[in-house]
Length: 243
Picture 1 (cartoon, one colour):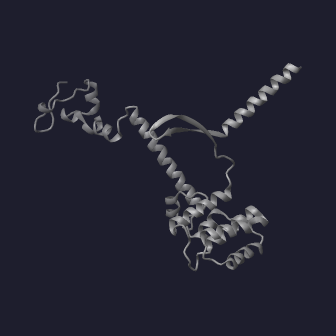
Picture 2 (cartoon, rainbow, N blue to C red):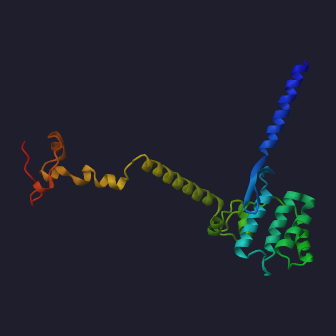
């Protein structure tokens, strides 16, 4: 019994060590003094992981949109606080009562010119209603995100105001089908397949050699599919063929 317990403990320790190793990555660093290489040192670092967080993903894409449109700070304008309203709506659903500090911190980073009173008013408006999660299309309309801009920035968690979700799904399906066709086309070329245009240009249906003999295709096939020599074809376009 003691031996089994000891064996089980060793197995558990190995499993724990393996799980810990999976969460770590190793970086190899060169150790130098001037131009003299003394050796190498392996440094372990913890790998990024964890489950996808929808709020964080949407917030990062909204920040990407802001950088694309305005730079590192949203300029002062009449509609500039729409970004704060969107973040407040998303944070309210994600953090409930704790969303206030999240919104204040985000606003201080991206709209530092906005007064705290204006941000708190937006926060107060969010708490006055029972708020449900915003759909992707609702976010797209709020941010006035076009489909072209969405594709250019590779934004996936926010919709587009000019292309509804159903149409976006069809367009995405068409893109996937085109990529799949291109991939299969490359595979056929790598396997030695001839392009259709080249195949048709060299096909019998295009060259029609039986017409050079003045006979039908069936007769030409029965006579062994002879091919005329170009220099033997007279100016009239056909040559006699013995029956």
